[in-house]
View 1: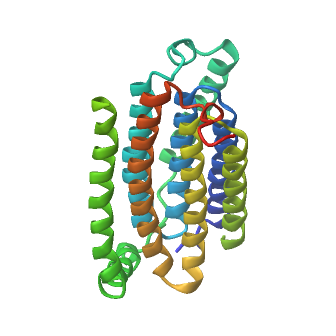
View 2: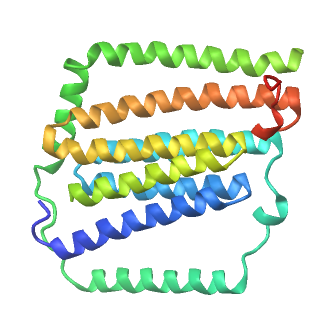
Length: 173
Length: 97
């Protein structure tokens, strides 16, 4: 499916991989938990792009919805609840160099979009892609792994009850 | 693309291990565990190109378990914070003689 533009595809694959690794390095070296969490969100977005390029479209969407959308929000919520973030680091504007770099990236992206808009779209995706990408996952999930899928719901219920009980006990004691 | 994906996965996992070993903030520790789970997910997806879609199904299960782990773990962090007034793991010395 990607044989039309192998160079562009390879470039973006490596780009998102390097971005993910760089964001992960920035994530473990940040002092403030809030900026650490935001860099981790960046890692997860890059990984979602990698999943899509590896023909795992459904996993990529679920990655953004569940990881970046739900789990990291819980993390940031707990950081705010415990008042751990440093306001001077999170609410202030960045330094001049960072703003210049952000502007350069914005210009680069705008140039890329303009270049892509000028050219006619190549036939990237064949029409049968959504069919043979998502359907096998659902078929395997709901036939071969059906028991594990059902047990997962019990696991989530236990986790909900456990989390509520643990978090509630602190207010009484 | 499987080789580079496995390489990136190994890098991300190593960074997560480094974070777990060097950081003492309990919240960041949990985030490092999430990063390690993500690295494993990446190799699952990459290898599912070779061995069928079972890898992608496993990624969905890993995400579910990660969500449960995050919920319970963060509740424990909240309980620890209410008791000790800190999330610095170096300050929890109940079991030290």
